[in-house]
Length: 476
Ligand code: ATP
Image 1 (cartoon, rainbow, N blue to C red):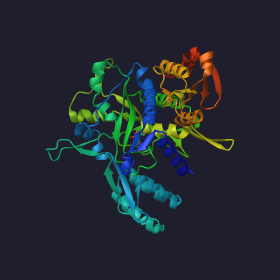
Image 2 (image 1 turned 180 degrees about the vertical axis):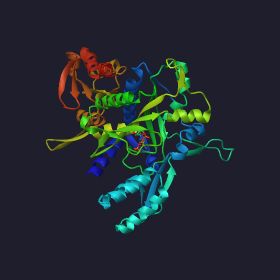
Image 3 (image 1 turned 60 degrees about the vertical axis):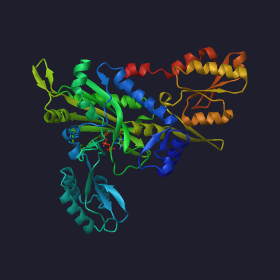
Image 4 (image 1 turned 45 degrees about the vertical axis):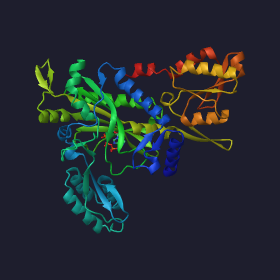
C-alpha cells in the first residue's frame, strides 16, 4: 500500500514538474533529486513562509548566508571529523546494509524483548560506543537464539558521513569537507553578526542553505537525500534560561507547522534518547509520513558546546559580556533545524488527493494556498480577440502581486485538470459575459464550485484569500 502510494507520488511529482531524478538521462544518481518549474516555486514559498516567520517579522533574529566550504578547523572543533559517523552492518544473507541501531531493533524484535537484561547490555554498549565488545556479544546472541538463518554479517563498521573534496590541487593532502549542517557557519560568525548588527542577547541567527551527508541508507524519495537544504536558526541565550527558550521554540515551531493545516494529529513531539554528539537535551517534531511518525524538525539545546570548542581551537575571543554581573560568559544555544526537502515532502504527500466522482477519478493537489506554485490561473474560454485582450489585462493586473499563470491552450476541462494537479487554488475563466457585464467566473480547486465575480472586485477577493498578516501578528 505504502509503496504503491509512494510510486503515485513520485510519478505525479515528475509529470507535473515538481521533482525529477537528478541526471535522469543517465539513469539517475542515487538519492539526489532536481526540482522542476513547479517544485522550485513551491520550495521558494516554503522558504518565504519560514523566513517571514523566523526572521523578517521579528526584531531579534537576523539572517545570514554562509559558505558550504570552510576551514577544516571548523569541523575539527565541532567534532564532526571525530564523531559524525554512522555504524552499519552488512548482511551477507540478503546483501543488505543495516544501520546499527535499526539492526539492533530487529534483533530485539526477534528475541521478542524477553531477555530484558540482554537488551539493556546491548543498548548500554551502543550508547557508550563500545563497538568491539558489542560486535562480539551480538554474534553470540545470533548463534544462541538461532538467528543465523536470517543474518550472516561482516563486523560492525563505520564511516564518516561528510563528503570530501580537494581544495588545493597542487597540495596532495589538502582535502576539505562539504558542510553537513548549516549551523557551524552561524557559530563561527556570531561575533561578526553581533558587532555588525548590534544584537543584544537573547537573539537569533538564521540561514537557509545546502548541506551534504553521505547517508548510507537513503530511501523514501526526498525524505533522506545526500544533498539537501536546511532551514536553521540558532538562538543565543543567557545560561540558565535554556528551559524557558527550549519550551518557547517547541511551541512556536508547532504553531508554524499547524498553520499549514495538514492536520494537528500528524505531528508529535519526541524527546531524544540517543543524543547526538552535541546535544544535552533535544526533541524532534515528528510527522506522520504515510503510516509512520518520522523526524521532520529538530529542536536542540546545544548548550555552549560549539562556541566553547571554537574558542578553544581558534583562541579567539568569542565570549559575551554580562554587564550586570560584570563578567564574560559563553552564551547557550537553542537550535531549530528543519529540512526543506523533508517539509516539502510532508506537504506534498499530504496534499495529493485522489477522489472518485461518478466513476471518474479526480486527482488534485490540495496545497495550502500560500504554498501553491501558482495562486491564480487565467483561462480565456474562447479564443477571440476581445476576450484575449481582457484576459491579458486581468493577468497583467494580478501577476505583480500573485504568482499567476496564463493558459489558453487545450480544452477547459484539460486546463482545469492541469491546474488541479499543480495545486492552483483559483482558476479565473473569461467569456463573453466578461465583455458585456465585466464579470468573470472563479473556480475553486477544492470544491470545484464556480462563482461569478465583477472584474473590479478581483483584487479585493484575492487580497483577502492570501493575506497572512493576521497569522504573523498573532503568532510571533
Ligand atoms: P535523521 O535522524 O533523520 O538522520 P538527524 O537527526 O541526523 O536526522 P539533524 O542533524 O538534526 O538530523 O538535521 C536537522 C534536520 O535536517 C532534520 O530534522 C531533517 O529535517 C533534515 N535532514 C537531516 N538529514 C537529512 C537528509 N539526509 N536528507 C534530508 N533532510 C535531512
